[in-house]
Amino acid sequence: MSQPDRPQWIEVIKMDALEAKGRAVIKAEGKQILIWKTEKAVYACNNRCPHEGFPLAEGTMAEGCVLTCNWHNWKFDLESGETLVGGDALRLYPLQIENGSVFLDLTDPAPEVQREKALAGLRDAFLEHDYERIAREVARFERAGGDPLETLHHAFTWAHDAFEFGMTHAQAAAPDWLALRSQKASAPPAEQLIPIVEIIGHLSWDALMEQGPYPFADTRAAAFDATSLEDAIEREDETVAVAQVRAALVDLGPDALRPALQRAALRHYQNFGHTPIYVEKTYELLAVLGPDAAIALFLPLVRSLCTGAREDLIPEFRHYAPALENWASDGEDIASADAYQGTGVRGSLDLIARGGGRVDALYDTVMEASADAMLHFDPQYRDHVDKPVQQNVDWLDFTHAITHLNSSRKICAEQPELWPNALLQVGCFLGRNANYSDWSRETGRWQVANGEAFLDGVLEDVMDHGEPLYIYPAHVLKLATAVREEIERRPDAPWVPKVLAAVNRFVHEPMKRKHVRRTAHQALGFVEAQG
Image (cartoon, rainbow, N blue to C red; front, side, top):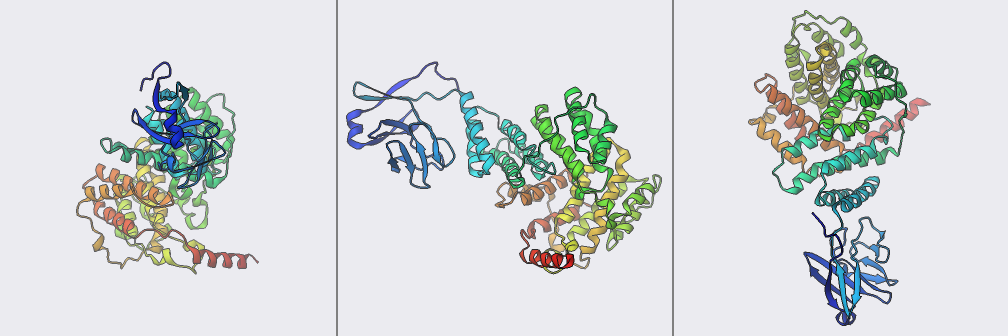
């Protein structure tokens, strides 16, 4: 994309021909250019509207320099180059009139100028969640020689302080989108563009909904101390935790944080099991984007660790802490997956705690039991309108047990002493979900003959999901990716058929997107009970 050092003027039309028509479209060097003579001046611009490519030659000129695209009413000031109504910038071309002819300089701007302009446009699109423009600006950036991953780095920087409670699924799903993109390295350009646009669009949407920013403290600890970081997270002291993170990133690098963040993530059954997922996905994303993205990734992560609800402190899960204390590290009593059917939280925790000496066998059992519960989910709880809020149960209550186990296994491979925390937290899922499964439900129709082909199909469908809200395809992507990782590691594991069947049912009986009647009923009931 080397450029000439100076303008390259070419003759494009005679003035008398232009005056006779008032406007003309010429093609030169692969470009389609509109030249318009008004009472004010002569102007040259790209004939394709930067919005959707409709011909501006069919537009309307007003005030001698304001060109309107009549398809969607975008307006461009050809004098200043400003887009008055709309978003994307219209390219103007330098023009000279000499010896009765119009000359244009068709030299493209230097690549770095084009990339800078595309990033500025992307920032505007990000702030407004203009999905189509996000796609166009990323495409422009790449066409100018830029690496699309650089646009992600910018997007995470723009979003990092936008969230009151820290990291969202936009960051958690990003590495799975990028893994899918890497598998399509030889696919057409559009397939490569989709994951980038989905990540930026999701970040943009979440940031817009939060109406931030929520700034982080700019202090930095004198030296990183893992114990101080964990204690700060436990006290929900974000200021101290952020200071420790900044010190670690500057002095030691992101890997220094990992053990402490992993321990903090599994210390409680918290944030509905998201914390170990968030920690592992942040490191997966960092591996792609590089250490320069660390601040933008780790500050939202540590905020989410500080603010996440600790469900093991509520009555429903109060037996988690005693079960952790009573963990039988030499126990070998491994119950079958069927033993968890209909068993509540306390019973599930007791079953798991008795087998602490055989964590591999426990992993197999709780994975199979999690898939079994998901496969037998009773959809009446998805569709009810008049039950109490604690019975608002849907597919994600079940999928999270599997994705939690996937991320926790990776953590425990590095810190085996955390296996009791990880497995007992899955027990919390199993015990709660047992109340919302119909164990008599026929499930044979959901069996999968070819697991690899099935998961490939699920991920292919995600690439053109059609969902207006990002959270739903993010969970399909997250679940399918986790299941594929687990099966690739253990293709002959006893739980494989049930896990595949559960995913098959999930993708064919999707979540209800909005609960209108339920919300109204529960709002009235809550307000009445408040008095």
